[in-house]
Length: 408
Image (cartoon, rainbow, N blue to C red):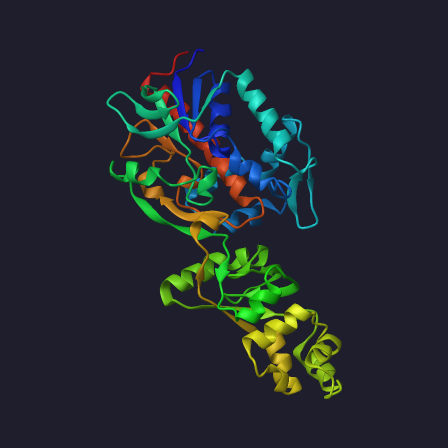
């Protein structure tokens, strides 16, 4: 190798992408992963179809990151969804656009892409060492707990790509926060993102409907209605439509200890039409039949109406129609962070420079979900992790060159 020795801590998408870029530049890369294998969360995400990115126009794509720091946006500019698709194609994983606009590998699974990726890294000389857990800094480098005991590794630069705090069983356990906080790195507390919420269901409703989907609904939390579906869980609600609102709902719960999601159970019908159709129903028919024939509601939607307002069967057509179009669902709290798809919080952008190096620790860089940003599901999370991994890798290469420690 003509380059320098680089240590990457964390074998998720951000770390693997950084390893690819740095090894392609001729550096000797050692990747240290605490778990028995790399890419465990990546593989889990691909169990039901690996959502790589999104096909919407790029100008709209970047708005999904809301108040993202300009450095994150620059990283995305340098590795757009089109770039990601070309990268996957180069690994033999052709992609297609689903009906929702989400982009998937044709094989749908994550394992073929990960195998090809690992083969590329091996061909470029990347040394992957699993069951190697970073435990802190030493005078000459970093301390790592290995199967043979704790040992020190010395590198010319280190990239930390240790993830956030969701799905700790897969490796993202946020143990690193104390190690960096002790070095003066500003870290915002982790909070769940893309998560479910608790609802105080009655025992009867929970027993009968836990696991039931609600399809063909829209929901609003901040004035914007989003169509989709979600699932009634034993604890409350979860699923893609809930995740789309999770950031605003979580923030409102933090501020006010209360949050309401407003549901339209019949988005294809106006309140006027619903009231008219409900008025035509036989008053002696059961409430379920009246709602099925007059509003097109299935049993779970009808039960949700009664769960929210026990007096619903006695309402007049206009009041009932108004409730169907705007059913308030009171949420109590987010589900635990270990269940969340992703997290908000982490290392603040003020703590890193434009090259993704920690200001408090020269030569130590960070990438991925360790940094304080968040995005919805739909391929946005994975795209940003890969993009920041590439950005940090280029930051390392440039830093070494500027210091005169990058060999020609």
